[in-house]
Every structure is written in structure tokens, then in C-alpha cells.
Picture 1 (cartoon, helix red, strand yellow):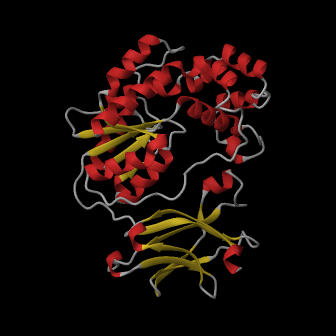
Picture 2 (picture 1 turned 90 degrees about the vertical axis):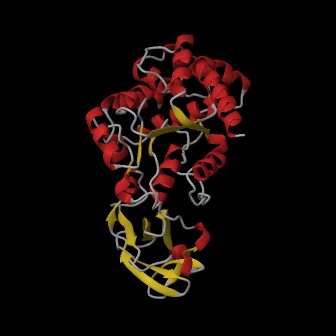
Picture 3 (picture 1 turned 180 degrees about the horizontal axis):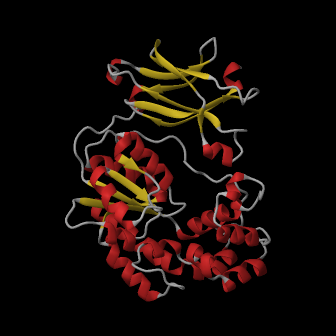
Length: 358
């Protein structure tokens, strides 16, 4: 029963450190102490009072000060234990227990530098978490899209893994010579990616008084508010949305995945853009499918001789009510113009990289 009094989530767990957040459900503003055990031996503990902006923005915690970070002792060897546990409270209530086989080992050998082109709503957040679990903290930079191209060039010198909402064209401009960089991406069933992306953008404007709304650019706010006035389950309203989409809406929802593989940012996507996207696909070492994420991860680990640890659940999974039924034939026909090129891209990637992996 005491276990249910605490809310816990672990972001990263490896043989170097553990990070996440934890709080008491009835006393949310009072930081709790989290303890860590190798089998039954206490390794150490820390106070869960670090700021977590994500929890504040999503209203999961009143002030967000419930994050924890615990660095393993210098003499810690995961192979010396069978389990790793997290607990809290005066009675040391165990909140989570890992078999040691579930613990990532930080990569100690030199690997090619990796740039991950993070296409929205394709399991990219899960892959970012995986990268943070296997590389040293100072070797990983996530969400590098705000950086200027010059900064990206410099980051390549110091980091092993870079990830961001960067297009292939932007990445090409930042790569310097034959720098041994390998490119990765993940794409998703186009209808499901479109629905998830639309739902996420709509979610920005659900609560205008919340920090999550305030942190976004005015253009995103206005688009989200407009989308909140639409009943996407009504065919006429959905059809009007598709027919009149332009500007930021077109950039986000008109064959979004194809756009990421282009050198420029067209107002509308056409067949010539698919040809350009196919050319840029040649730059990538591998492109995974969201629907086959575990297989993509396994191939990645095998390629670099990395210990494969299956991830727990989905990261950044939407809790929004579905906008429409992605399996409904009439709905898919209305949405077809927004996914036409993405569908060609998806099939092309599926055939090419699946065949090369065999």
C-alpha cells in the first residue's frame, strides 16, 4: 500500500548514473529521499528536488521540483549484483527493481559520430533516451535544432551523439568533410504520424493559462487555438482543414516526413520532392520504422557491439483523446493529400532497409 503513495519514473539507468523523478502523492511539494540498492546493500541516496520543467508544463507536479540524479560510486560494478532497486521513505519502501540484465552499460570504446534526424512523433524521443543511456553524459546533445550551423560543426568535435529536429539539408550543411559521421532516422506509418502530430499541436492550446502554452511561439499558439475550434471527427470540417492548410500548418502536416529529407522547405510537396528525398536517403546508415522499433534498436546495437536492453514502454506517448479514426476509410481518403508522398517514402524505406538488413 505504501508503494502506491509515491509516484516514480526513471529516465536513465546505466552503470554510471540513474535519473528520474519521484514525489509523494499526498505531499507533492515536500521532496522525498530516494535510496538505491545493489541487491540488499544500500549504495547511496539523494533528494528528489531537482527542477523538472516537463512535469511543471504538463501539470503532473505543482512546482516541478521532484527530479533526482544519482551518480554511481566510483567502485560500483553492475556485474557484482543481481538486482538494482530504488526505494524511499523511513521504511525504505522499494518502488522499482531492475534485474541487472536490464541495466545499460556505458560505451567505453570509440564509435563513429552519430547524428539522429528526429522526425516528430516517430519514437525519436525513445531513441534519444536510449542514446543517453549508452553514451557518457558529456557525449550526448539532444534537441540541437536551436543551434546555428556553426555551433553544430563545433558540437560534432566534442559529442558522440547529436539529435534534433534537423532536416537532411541542414545536416548536410553542418557536416565537415569526411568526418566519419553516420546518420540515422526513424519514420512512421504516415497516417498515424500525421494524427499524432496534429493531436500534439492541438494539445498546445488546450489550456492557455498553462506554461506549456506560454513556452511556444505565437504562430504555434495561433495554429493550436484554431485547431481547437475544429471537430476533426466531422468529415466536412476535416475536409476544410485539409483543403485550406497553408503556412505553418502545411509545413507541419503536409507530408511532414518527406520534408525532413529535403534540402529546402517548399510551400507544397510534389512528386519531384520525393525524388530529392530518395537521393538524400542515400546519406543515412539506417532508417528505422516506428512499428519495428525494437528491431531497429537491435540492429543498431549489433552494428556497434552494444549490449541490447529492451526499453520500458513508450516515451512521450500522447494522452490526448484521438482526433479521428485513422483506420476509417473515408477519413483516410480525406487525409490522403497530406500523406501521399510520405506513403511512397515509407514504402521505399521499408523495402530498402529491410532488404539490406537481411
